[in-house]
Amino acid sequence: AQSVTQLDSQVPVFEEAPVELRCNYSSSVSVYLFWYVQYPNQGLQLLLKYLSGSTLVKGINGFEAEFNKSQTSFHLRKPSVHISDTAEYFCAVTYSWANQAGTALIFGKGTTLSVSS
Amino acid sequence: GAVVSQHPSRVICKSGTSVKIECRSLDFQATTMFWYRQFPKQSLMLMATSNEGSKATYEQGVEKDKFLINHASLTLSTLTVTSAHPEDSSFYICSVKSPAYEQYFGPGTRLTVT
Image (cartoon, rainbow over all chains, first blue to last red; front, side, top):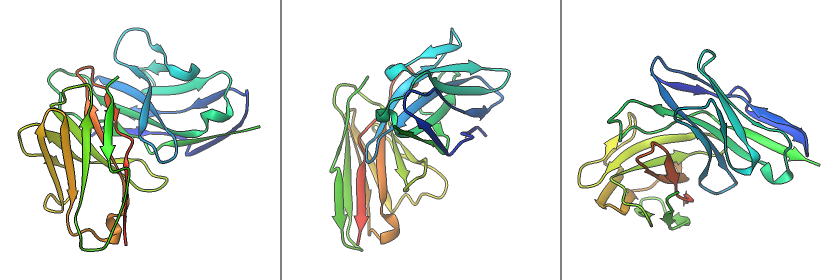
């Protein structure tokens, strides 16, 4: 069975500092990978996704992530964070083979990013 | 991406009553919707997969008779929590699956059972 591990439950950083949120997945088959952000009492917003092609994926709000198949990782990065980036971040995975239209996302436990001035 | 709404955003009900939560896909026809449950400071746990025109598929450990799901049209899925108890208090989130494998999430419904 697939699983997603977010190695850090909480990441405190200062404003304008770079940040990396780590995500590893375990799967013996090809997968699609996602990062979502959740602000308090809200649903999830897609930051970026990797389906195929370039392993470096750029998303919204200046975030990017790199798919590393050999290390089964999909770490999220931002070179300079803002106070407004404070939120919960979830890494998620789903199967990439065809006809899996009903396959749900499997989420990691989340990482709380706290940006302070 | 698709716009997904949920109603109500917050609901407080008494123990033993039933509550219905609606999930609407406003600009996208969704044959598949998902219902998640999220406890404070925790991740999303998939409850069930809702398929238009057929029965929902529930995850292991989720009581189908307690959490009734109806997906009667391509734009609406409902989750009814029957005979709610305080332990059912949670944040319920629905999502719509796109052909591109990503999911679009609703804003969530905060259920509090007193």
